[in-house]
Image (tube, rainbow, N blue to C red; front, side, top):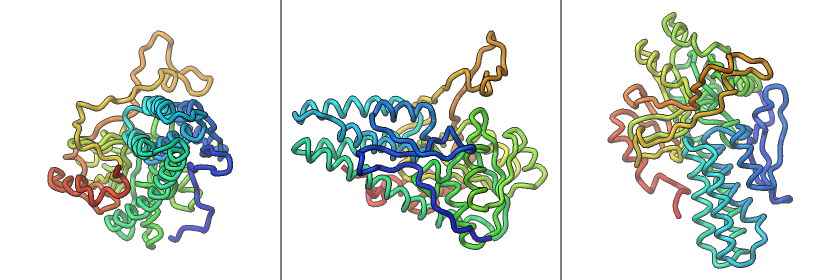
Length: 358
């Protein structure tokens, strides 16, 4: 099944004419696909917290462009005061999503460039150029990742995915969904089972919208039915994205771990698709702060109350999947396999970490 010709999504971009950031507000999907404009760092921070912009690689781009936005909008002429102002903006953005490592990676990459400038004018130019480079590299990274990953797919298969690791989570194309798109483009017969991904339904709202838009066969299921479908033999493999990969675990949307456990029990391959910017191999699972989100996301559905006010709510945004449940990690430099203590040496090789230097 070939993909129909459609205008490709561009989730987030720098608007040169206005010196601002434009992005698709993902909270409006699938009902409306609308672009919004950020003209201040505070606006961007609010958009990130509200998940108007989300997805690990897209957050990396947002972080990079946020630093550029702070630089361009600054009226400071003294370099020292300018750098201090940009630093405060970077700290604000970094605080918005503590579990997603790409956000801090994008912020730090542009901040390092800004710090090299000899003048405010040079700093602003460097910031915008580097932020745009981050966005452009993301597309190339996803395309390369997709090409490596699709080789793991049989010529005909049914694939389970969780949350949204597609074009909406990147600049375009996607990581996990980018692998699916690459497999379809290669002529393979791919059917997708998309978990709804409670409580904010990124699977039903975003993944289903993306795949249906591309004409890819997709079926929506409740998160809780995935294991039963595996037991029935209805799923051939699982592929998900990642928000952070430490030396011992993959952090991804809450619910990922249970799918990995079920897949392992049923002998189904469990794959993770993520760029090198998602790796944080200096840390272990126990060192990572897992974001907890607002009570209302579980206790309400729109204006309808789902739980009594007296009931406590625990609403983790992410979980951690031990690496012994992961059959392969697909990156832009190739497919990493166990033992990860050995294959992760490739990730630590500076020659492979293109674009992540000073």
